[in-house]
Image (cartoon, rainbow, N blue to C red):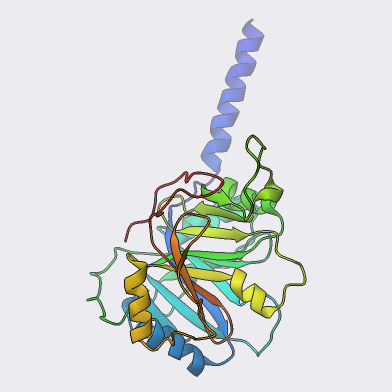
Length: 314
């Protein structure tokens, strides 16, 4: 009995020691920016500045050397050059806001994740870069106390990036990275087809797997079951980002006032309620990267599964 108690005590001490040596994960508040590849900055700027009504000189774009369009004081869209028709995803990088870049770097290294040295962005914010298991580029940007928000622009359609989505091939591996290691939580999952009543859902039945940041309500959307030989335009549909709007009809009205033609080949014919139960509408930039608009709350019950995390607020 004494020997067993001694072994238990040693085990508890060892567990406490290991826990003390393992860096804690800092907070992840939400999306800081999405970086999109563009073959023509001037044409792309027409979409992001004129049609979306985004300012190229807001707080979040201060010091950024590449074309940049502020969505709010802590979120923006960046452009980076790519040759026309370049293969692969044109969603170049997704960055997340954190409270401590140095601690995040230590944490990622403790998890066996390769990560860059701490760098300084144009706006003097420290950041680090890494890749997820499928080589999607991600970054973590340290945020200080947010400044006062800028006055609203009468032509700006959206003031919030809700999520970024990209093609995923191996759901278990990506789920482990984002959920087990980074602390993201399930937000919603669903598929194109309804399963017969009583049929258990498997990973192969899921076409969209959405996970929310641990300390906010932005999310990442895994686009599943995409053909390996998907062409540039199809990849542009899948590798996308989403802007939140409080009222879809008012957003559509503003898009048309800003110059979006009703019969544009770069826009859907009309808005619709998606399988997730939310009103949504899509337009495309000149390189066929999809820009989704979405209301924050569902207008009806979603297919397949209920939401399991809070709805975003605008």
